[in-house]
Length: 606
Image (cartoon, rainbow, N blue to C red; front, side, top):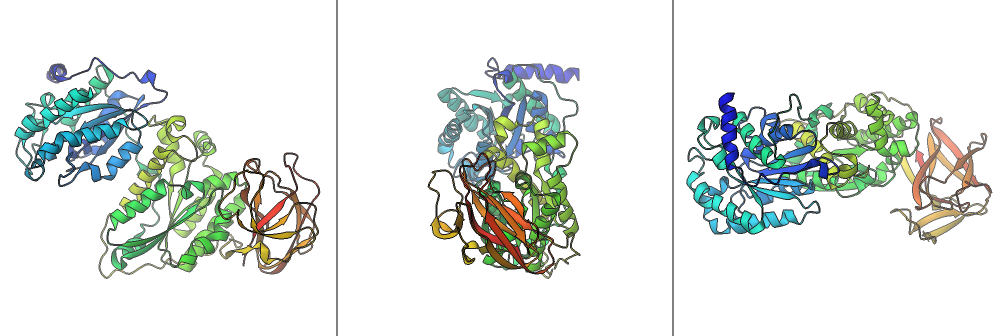
């Protein structure tokens, strides 16, 4: 130990620019550090690389006011014309999406291979391009260039001589031209061949020495190793009830696949969904995919169940379905019972259409769910959805719990990094990384040539009235009553917001007190899907001449948006023929500016 301490003090002699440390107190949340590199950064050859790679050890040394991420990829080059350029890797895209405050670049070892170094004249220019691209990030990171560690043998074509006489001079020149700090890992690990079992890659002790040198330069202080800070692993938030083997068989054998994404606005927008599509295309490069983007803002499990036939199954057989509804099932105000009716309806409808369909259920995060978990409570929406997932043997990914735990572990913050229940690009990346880890685990094996698809059996229903035969019926098909009219292309005149499929479409509209509108249907559940804007009124309804009930159509968001909203007016009815009657009342919500009822669809579970 005494020898190592003296050795480390000697190492500090080689650290350039350490007089300009980073002060975490100048940052509103933990300092984000992106470690860009090759297999040495990745931690190849280290038995527990998730704990002992240099980025993992660096994170523990720096402490809770820092977040360190490993973006290393084995065998990659700085040279754009190299055999495996880092530029082409998903890790490069992810590193930029991370919006780091600090970037550590440690590339160059693989560039010394003969097939790569023939482009040596472009090494400096390619390095400069990477630096300039990083400087353009909105986070304006501080960039450190590393001199590569020594190569103690000429293995895989790697040349220590070229590291010394080619790569290192280019690193020094670029640092001088761009006023960047250099971390001299070459001299820091010189004479330490015993720390390199294969003569190229450092072991855990060697990676620890790299981390100490970097930590000292970043922080300006003697690094201390945290005693028991193990990184959180996404697999702890995955419930593996199915390995998605049917989807793998179809994608690999048939070379065609249809993947659907059903959910709310987090699924509708670009982000994790686009990343999963890109992942699937890369994972199965010979497969022709048809991706169905069926996310619609503000819609949870009940709307999902009734639009499932139109928005998902109408395109044909689906092989893999990603479904999320936990956020909107709380904001939509559906009861525990109807949350199960909706989610079971989606799952059962899916499996009835294709018994081999693989389904993945996802629980996204919002502040209410974070608060529940911190009180030791599993959010009720997640409890309800997990009942369905367990009953049907469907895998699930609890991103609400994972994000909460990672924030509480000091890895990032809600306010600065995740931003909102509609995640920032960084937040979408967190979602994607967990999903990718899940899929990697599921598809880690090979498909045997004669293996057959598994038809999943349908168990008894959890809820007899689940919405497994949901259907949307355009409201304009119903004969208008007094005070009601059909508008062929309705759009608001109040200049407030709209949502797709609820503007410039046919609507059945009433704007004053009306007569009774009659809707005859056959099934066991019924409701209306409306555009609830700032003039939304109050309706009264009844089924089969039972007592009238009131429904206020004005929502918490109606002041600024003609919000698509699903109001269920009857469920768990006896299967058969029924009549729904609706009329608009003269009374309205005190916050509303009118008495409007604009019906886009009636929905029925047939």
